[in-house]
Image (tube, rainbow over all chains, first blue to last red):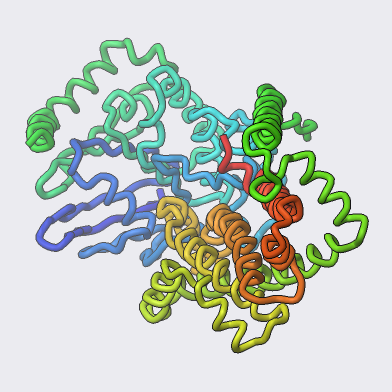
Length: 258
Length: 263
């Protein structure tokens, strides 16, 4: 099977600080990859390098065989904060990626409307962001990334600012949307249960320097519902991943207190 | 699948009450003023009653005097304000876009903004004569700086997160400017323009006090010289009304152009 994303010997330093060291990864088409790790393990930096928002210090990232050197329309980024333009309507926000690429024909407009319906925002196309709840704004954030029909979807803790119930709803919504299109996804989160619930594979990062500790294949059947979170198998995965990062998390908590 | 857009919910409740309270407050103030000037001061050389001022306004309006003064002041204000707004936005853009421009212009802008340039009005009259252009120059000096400073600040403080969002789609610097920086600077630019209204009106009148043939400032100066308190206050009230109307009009414009900054 064709490899969608290939990352070899990727490294990143900020001055003296080594944020990422020797990351190697191959992602297959349609795979859902979650990245977890303690704060300071470089997981967000990793995602930003793949997005082209940050240059790598070493190694390379190849998407469909081509080395990436900057941001581009082949990758859709879903931000932690929704980053919607407050003066634009939901529809105008969702189509902005197409607008940047100079493609706002009837087909793209139709596709954007369909995506807004897919994420559950039908009827809200002409609303402004300030009229929406946090969960709805994140749906626009997702639709905006999907609207450019990217080769890969990069998601940076997109549900972390939502309350616990809304987050669970959004997780099942994301599963439903993903099943509809089966995009390749890189999903960064600090929530282990979220990672296990969503992903085919969970990459566990360690800190100082940020590196890939273990890649955990999640062999839970799909489609998954929230009920799966209460099964023994699910809990075994969560426990296993938690044990991998526990010491690191404790270290980072102590550091943050100091 | 297009559903009709639901009307945007607008906070209508509470607004009339604000107007009622304001109106009552103004009416009470006028009544106190009337009583004070008739019973307490009781000397037409020191204070005019609101009723006398109103009568003076009517008389001035009927004789055509009021329009003559108002139109001259209005032209001076409009010319100065328009030139200053345009220049201010352009200079603000230049400073936000080019660090060199900013370094070159910043000391001048900061210095002149803090200086009471209105004190230079006699000098301007000396240079440009007693006609409208000396007043236009005073207005330009007073309006230019708040507009420049706000435009520059508005463009500079564009949210990094919004810029990054657009950059993730591969947007060019030009696209980032027009799709993010410029729209997010509009509320700042409008605030600067709003600040300019009051400063500009004061500039017109004070410059006219220093020397002019006509204008509301001239009317006020003339009336003061002849101890005609009702005419003096008539000039002041007309100015105040102009200030209130222009500022309110601006508030309406802001609601239309940048609704996301409200609530």
